[in-house]
Length: 194
Image (cartoon, rainbow, N blue to C red):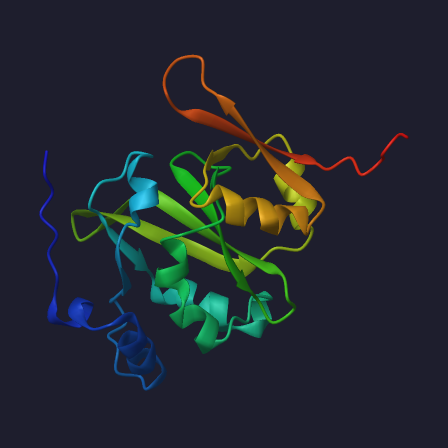
């Protein structure tokens, strides 16, 4: 079933212009930020052609130091671009959620994660909603925990370089059922026996 995506005049504005409108107080309180269509890398995980949105409440949370996120406007403006080519796509801890690690850093130089809800609604239309964006403390432990299944990698070579800098590596195993792969993150054993 094809879902028609309805774009209002406000949604057609670029994400950067929406950010400016928000800070000038020109954005209506019930309007969401429109980050574009769902990135292609997420399509194979059950989403096709839905809008990618973020609520003003989430936007306020990610820009506010009070919540510990305090992402700069410069970083936030890069979200749509970096979400198209994340290092990793992980299964979220809640049903119908994903987490992207996107290659941006927060003000404390921590890697940024984007939490995504796959089955959200906006005025009777299915949307994919960014529910949080934040720098993750203890990312290595987070990645090594068995709760976080790697679903996809945009660029294996780039992702592996990033992981090796953290003392981790990405291992790829062919799936027994189909032509897909399973990815596992593990620590690098630097001990060399001579």
